[in-house]
Image (tube, rainbow, N blue to C red; front, side, top):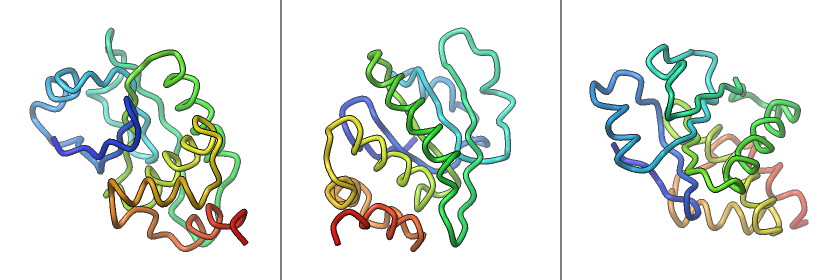
Length: 142
């Protein structure tokens, strides 16, 4: 399973619900928290004793759903600070999951959104393709 490491213990990737060995792959990578940015629930991920699964359905739209994005970010940062290894995923790891990961970087490292976006794109060059999300991260650089 290909994942992009954004920071130590913080990863993003696209959808993996149809991978037959996904649970073993997550465990082998040390992932113990999975944050899903989709409305689609992965039933295999529910009620696992060793992997926490949380959904924050974030639309890939022309505007940023701040409430959902910040709720997901707070959750990711809290679990990361507790020492967990967190995977944030959406469909293709092009907009939603990278956006939340970038917001998490701003909180974890106390850096501006533009720097978080640059770090993110160093690991995943096509990250944050949604223009509204990209503008949101770059706002403080203007």
